[in-house]
Every structure is written in C-alpha cells, then in structure tokens.
Length: 315
Image (cartoon, rainbow, N blue to C red):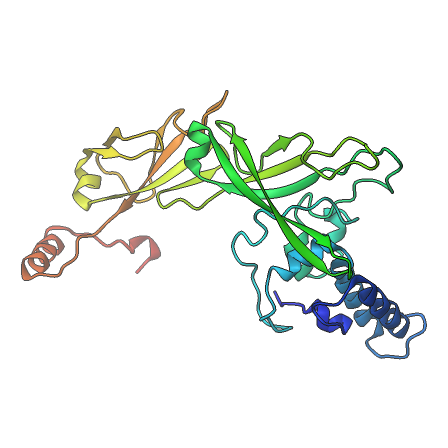
C-alpha cells in the first residue's frame, strides 16, 4: 500500500486554512474534470483530487491524517502505525464505510472501518441534539477479567479562528465492565457533541480493543496460551503449573502429545453469561546442544529411533 500526500496533491501547505483548501480544490477540479479537461490522465487526477479533498476538507479526518506525521513521501510503502487512531474522537464526516472503498487502499485502510466518518443525518436545526461521537480505546486483558475504572485521554479536533485544524485533549474516567470483548462499545451518555441552542448533547461510544499481552491472545471470547514443553514431557506426559489471567492452575499433559495440540480449560476464557474457554497450545521446546554431554545425548537418541519426520513427503 502506497502513502498518499494529500497536501501535495492539493498543492497546499500542511498549515493551510480550510478556505485555502476549498479554493485549491475548486481550481484543480475545473482543471481536471473529465468532461472538460484535455489532460491525458484527467480522470485519474480528478479521482485522486476528490480523495484528498474528502480528507482535508473535514477537520476530523484531516487531524487523524496529520497524526501519521509529515516524514512520509508519496508512493512509499506504508502501513499505519499500531493503534495510530487510539483515543481519537470523531463524530462523522459525511460518508459511510462502503463509500470509503470507492477511494484508494490507503484511504480505506485509514478511514474505512465502521463508524469512522459515518454521516449522521442532515443539517441540525435549532434545539437539535448533538451528534454522537466515537473513539477507539485499548485496555488490558485483565481489565475484562476483573472489571476496572480507567482514566482515558481523548484527542478532539477543532478549527481555530484562522480555519486551521488544532487538537484539544480531554480526560474521562471510564468504567470497564467485566467480560467486555474487543469490538464491543461502552456508551457514555451526554459525552458526545454538544446540542444546538440548548439541545441535548450526543453520546460518546468507545470501541474496545485489547493491548497486546506478553502471554495470551484473544479470539472472540476464548483466550489462548502457547505453552512450551520439553520433548520428554510431550511424549511421556507430565503435570505442571500453567498461568491464566485468574491465577495458576494444574494441567495434565497427556502422553504422546504433539506440537499444536490444544488442551481446553472450559469456562476460563473471558467471563460473561456464556464464558469463553482457555486453550493451552503445546509447543515443543528443544534443549540446546551446547555441551559435549548434550550432543552425546542427541546422538544416542538418533541411534535409538528409526524415525524420518519427512516420510509423508516421500523423501
């Protein structure tokens, strides 16, 4: 996926005001409109221009785009930094997730996820309710197991008097309910955009994601742990302590276990009315042959077994 420099496409500086961006778009749209332009690549230029304007005309999408930094060059291979949009509050910019697919892969990767930039209806009238806003936050796996109260910081874009985008920050104490899953939302009533002329404020919806955990990974309601075992533990069977988010448990490794075998601890996944399961995935860990004694042990093993692990390949 290639990075797109929307400011370069529009021919404006990164600190350009919204009026300047609008004027630049109108000028270039007349130049590259396929119905009137004599440029050979007018249609492609016009589409690229429309994509750039879709981002830069909207303070929320522009502020999010600016978070990627100014050190990228157009055409470079690009992947969004991990959690690049965490804590970024948005309330809608007038397109749906399906419409995002009409633009480039770069645009869709950044703005195509559900909710980001979704239109929320027409113009507001007097005493109208404020728009709902959305943000993505990351929590620890343990927060879902036990419930928690966390202080989160949100970035909120707005225009200054010069029509330039600036970001303000606000902090909220959020109660994390026990058993919440990635992709679910926490609703904070009245924490969205303010209403018009005394209208009721909108709500804030926080989409939940989990921080990467050094031990566990989560799939829906199930939790997985890769467990290293010695070859003799896998072959002969063993009993051992295994960590879980709720403490250590005793686990029995059946004899003749193979790499990738899954042992299920029912009901020890994410809590809830239908709790998930905890899966232990066996991984065979080979002891290093870093001494003469260890090398001799491997040579003795080689002589003891008539074993070809590639036999199924016919070699």
